[in-house]
Every structure is written in structure tokens, then in C-alpha cells.
Length: 103
Ligand code: FES
Image (cartoon, rainbow, N blue to C red; front, side):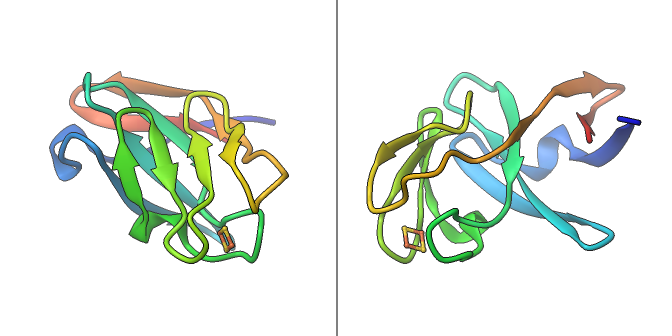
């Protein structure tokens, strides 16, 4: 069953930045876009399982640091290959200054 969990404080992430969030064996990224919206996707690139938290965030996209695939963090879709498989995305909400994700 899905549950909401605290991932980080809103102030932990600068605009157009991503941070890694690990929960048990799973790894995610929390992304803050240029308009202060927060998103959560799987943390590993679907191409070769590199951590996306080291990638470049531009508006609501993140570029994989290894081969430069670009993903739309609002829906996980690939915008630029070589990755061809979308990232899973997870609902987010802000409660008392905490970014929560539903996983
Ligand atoms: S590992 Fe991400 S694009 Fe290749």
C-alpha cells in the first residue's frame, strides 16, 4: 500500500537542483524546478543506472550526467536519448515545510 513519507525540507533544495533520497533499498531524486514545484522520480537513469542526482536540472528537466539523456521530471518521459525508457514518477506534497513523497 502506498504511503506518504518525509523526503527532505523544502529549503534543502535550491531552485533547479536535485537531491538524492534513499528509502530502504530504493533510491529517488527530489527535484525543485524553476517555479518552486517539487517532483520525485526514480533516482537511477533508465539507460545505465547512474544516479541522476548529479545531473543538471533546467526548468523541469534533468540531464543524466553520464550520456546526457534528458528526462521531463513532471512525467518521467525521455526527451533526449540514448535512454528510451521513462522514469517512474511519484506524487509529492508539501506539509509543514517538508517535501513528502507517496511511494
Ligand atoms: S546512463 Fe544515463 S544516459 Fe546513459
